[in-house]
Image 1 (cartoon, rainbow, N blue to C red):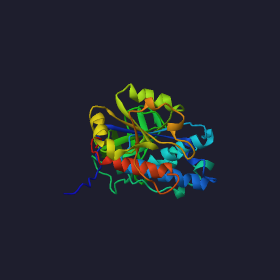
Image 2 (cartoon, helix red, strand yellow; image 1 turned 30 degrees about the vertical axis):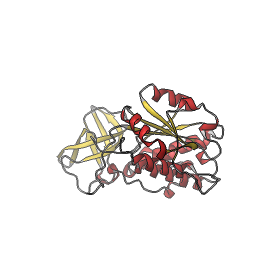
Image 3 (cartoon, one colour; image 1 turned 90 degrees about the vertical axis):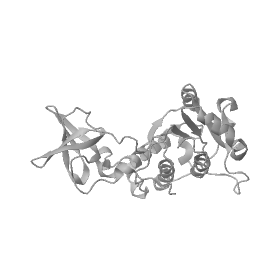
Image 4 (tube, rainbow, N blue to C red; image 1 turned 60 degrees about the vertical axis):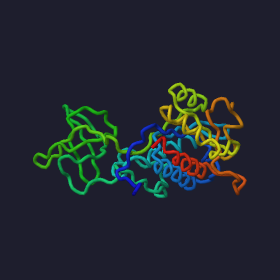
Length: 282
């Protein structure tokens, strides 16, 4: 039996990841910071994360926080409309180092046909029509108002005299990437999702090995609307500056680690791999 599915399905329950902007603080150059963001973005997409929430710990600079948000949002944007949505600035001068995500909407169709779906960039609206940029396909006309500067999923409704007429659509039950938000205080993130019946998990070297509490985690996740999984930065773990009462579980997914520290991008892969085996969030 093959477990590879393409297009990839959305998760049945939301998976939200939170980590601090300080993940970039150890990198000295824009190029290295960009590479680090690329590693994080790839992991988020591979494991079908719904939201990436960035918070500020004591080692986070506003500069790194904003840069990380920008790079992650750039990655998840379909390549054919990136230059429209994100004109190149100094902060994006090293984006050639980012690995491609190859999300389902990132591969645009070779031929324009009725029924084809694609993400487009709304350039302008006038007289009841919006001009939508579709990459190498060219432009389409959308007869619904959408705010200029927005990215919108559209479907080819008809082709009239070489004009591509579009209608607003959606990708349905297909996973199309993650959203990126900055919520400065970790406690605000936790309280928000706890009040909405999400399981709150901290991934930490100070936690219990996940193998010992897998059944408890599975049972808790089964009764929740989703999971919020929190990671620390290079110098401090949230375990050291927040109350353990905030979390439903504090888990260690790399018992007896062979290095003195595990980087956030490494912990992200290890933890999401371990939780994926529980299947409850699939």
